[in-house]
Image (cartoon, rainbow, N blue to C red; front, side, top):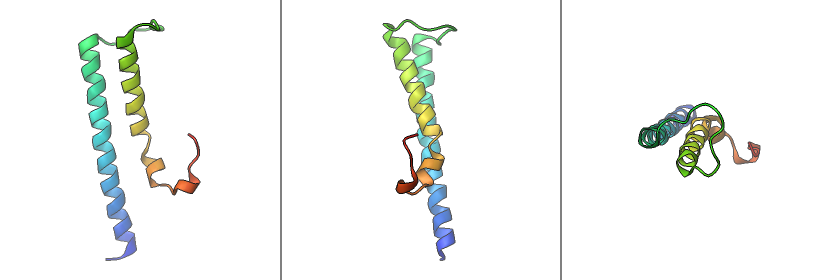
Length: 81
């Protein structure tokens, strides 16, 4: 075993966990859209709680999907974004 392969295996395992988390989050989005209906064009009403649930679920799925580079970086090299 060498350090290169250990890091490669760790990254592959981390990527698999991240992908599964994104699939779960995306399934929640699809289930909410099926239950409440897809969000149409235009700006939704601010007081519509069902639309806010869908938007929050989409936001969470988006952050999970874009996290691959952040998860592989050293914490000292991360910025707010």
